[in-house]
Image 1 (spheres, rainbow, N blue to C red):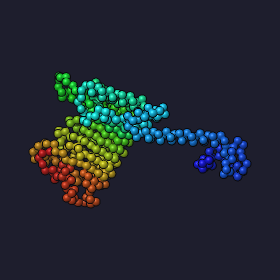
Image 2: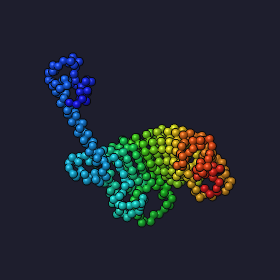
Image 3: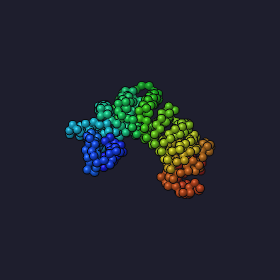
Image 4: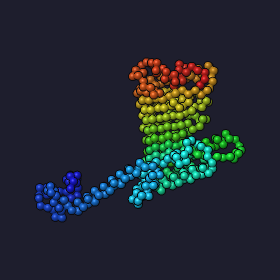
Length: 404
């Protein structure tokens, strides 16, 4: 008899010693005498033996599932052929935590958005549907979802396929979403001649993509509210921003630009960062259209610690209110725009120096463009810091060039 059992009985477990028998050596009717002098009820002893057996069995199954979780998806399926016990284990939803539609090793293709023959595309499409059915039939309990589908594709309806997956698996605990909804990994080679304006068709296609993306995002917000890491293209519409704001557990967010002609309003960007109270890391790939050249942005967040805007073009900050920020990555990217001196000065005169913006709004900043700042960087500049600002600041002092 373990001491854990004995201690458990002393605090009032059924079958424990009553106070009046604590010092009485006479056994209680229907009980057995422990060698240490404790008297135990037979029914209670049998009950606890069964309970301990169930715990051991549960632990054994959990250990087996943990070992099987290290296998690849193909090896998991092959292990189900070993015996009926393993077959039951492999059907556990805990073994199917990842839905990765971006993996395509079976086809040995090394490029994204690759044009293939219709036969090869149908083969890949068949794999996608079989993979979806496989996850549903296993009762997958997803933690990660990775996919790349053109949600504007009215023929293959990839958005409906992803919605069907979310409706039929356990995804309440989904924590990582990596979604490219702008193109499909494989596209069939289309040799047909299309009539009409290609630009008009592009606009319609983009609208379909955005509409279906918002439908899917709304379903994710309802079914997977605990997502902490999100990586996707973003259209920056008010509706999409409102949907992203529903993911209150987000800690890591990476947003890529959706369309070269789609701009980002300053108020929209500010509203997004303010609405996510737990956001720690933000990566923005924003392309400011030429018609909006001269606009500056305000970023505000009490929790943000890491900000990367190095891939953005034309993104200039007029104010940063980031009291917890520790690292910033920013870079000027030349866009090949030739401006006359008067126009350039008129635009640049609207913008404050990045050094001033950082000094006023990022009191805890320690790293700028992968370079650790000196402790007194806010009091005075130095050569290394000036060199970094030359690479990242758009003000008159740090950008004296007619070509942007």
